Length: 208
Length: 142
Image (tube, rainbow over all chains, first blue to last red):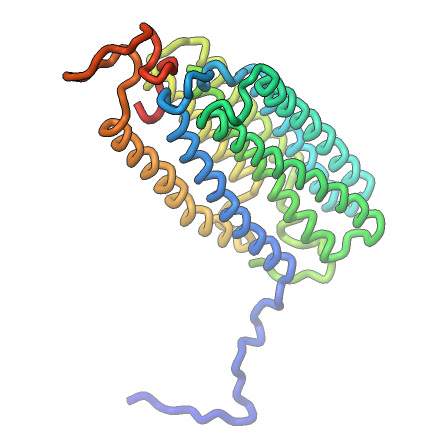
């Protein structure tokens, strides 16, 4: 038969050995969950692309094989991976509290990202100049939407990096700044992951 | 979740990154995508070609998850790993069911692509072009 224990002045309702609240982990995990939901947006775009890249949706316009340039896409892949590598190395400098190293890594990452966006804009601009803009066909609408959505993520990442450069200089490595730098690292690595999927599916599978 | 540290730079997610780890992730991802690009030149049958691209992409994604994101079963990362594993089926179901549904729909409601005539249907007006004037090419829906 179970025994009942009455609560008294010495009763503890919590575990005194439990971890203290870890605000950095809570913030990075919350941001991680946001990124998973963001990934579902891309999932919807990939599903739509799969549906609209069929010959029935080309409306007499160019299809994937005529639109994508796999060599240029590969250079973009190297640029975005280089950008992620540079930002990741900045976070290694963060371990040592090296402000200059962190700032250098972020600036180089921004340079690679700007070059990546330049390639993308050149591609989309070329298509539009040839009369193959997003209004040409359902397929091209989806192609532009997918590429532009990823590009917008990159632009917001660049703005975020600019803000972090200012915050590092102004506040140093406080808990808030460190949590934001970690979230930005995840966000940036996520952009490379999405691009690898775009390159594999839209460019490489489309070029067949 | 990891424990709290007085110095934020001592946090587990800061300590986990190393130069070697990130460089290896970069090299594996770049090599996989480069190899997949070269596979385009081989002109393999579509299924072989697609399988090769998918396999190389999976390797690149796994290397990024493990080395860039640092996902593992350590105390600091376990919940990120678990949430990702639980979300991946949603990705597959979303894309897979959409493609399946539209593939079936297209078969029943759309005119066939070029060169394919069904009983009771006339051939495409322009040889090499689809019935709506679109060039044919293999996609996931075919």
